[in-house]
Amino acid sequence: MSLLADNIRYLRNRLDYSQQKVADDLMITRGRYAKYEDGASEPPIDILVRMSRYYNVSIDLLVTVDLRKYSLNEILKLPDNRILLPVKVDRHGANVIELVPHRATMGYLQGYADPEYIESLQTISIPFLGPGKYRAFPAEGDSMPPHPDGSYIIGRYVESIDDLKAGKTYVFITRNEGITYKRLQARVGDELELSPDNALYHSYRVHLADIYEIWEFACSIATREFAKGEVQGDNIAIMRMLGELKEEINNLKEGNKSQGME
Picture 1 (tube, rainbow, N blue to C red):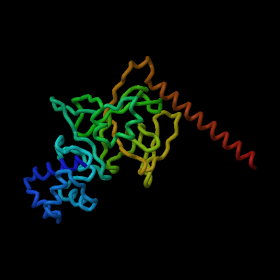
Picture 2: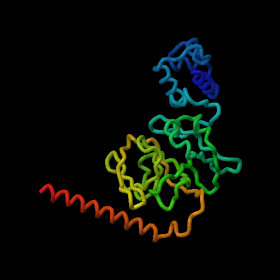
Picture 3: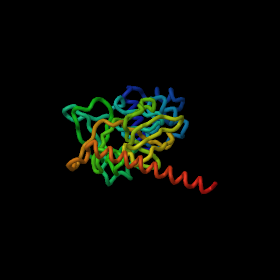
Picture 4: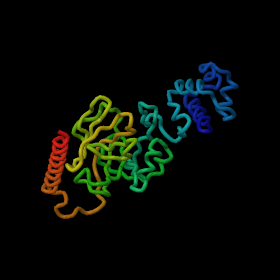
């Protein structure tokens, strides 16, 4: 709770309030409040809630982030009381983008809400991106042509589920799949129907409760040269035809099973 002590002292001084005023407003004694600022004792949950409401800062921020390092006006406040680090820019005013490396994709599930983990990621800047919070994720597998395995998808953070648009592609951080890049087909109640662009794979649904974060596609970075004809329309058409053929075979198998049962 040492961060809490530093934070409430910082917030009080920022408002230019005395310890007595804050203590009176929180309906506790000045001596008790002073112990919280000194780190001599820890506040019970009811006092912690009062502090959070008093300073208009989430409990998560109060106890996990050194607020002296960041501007509160720049921190994205999320509906589920989680936090995202501030929107940063470099000395030229371009967005600073955290890069999640391939080897750290599994670690991201444990660290996506940890400010220290996010700060440890390497960063890049791309000047033409508009306002918003951006992060780069590795593309893996062959489900989303023409983005090859090893490329990076740069996504803009989606703050509200209502901002999603059918037909657009997003990076979804989910409980079961981890980091996955898919196209949104539709929202069906409390679920999202997602589909890969590779016709060999089927669409599926993900419950909203299993989604941690959503990042809308902003741009991509290829890390290797494309082979000749690798992303030509003919290849995509072939994959689509193979997908349709696979589906027809499955339908024939199901039909044969039904006839056998009769």
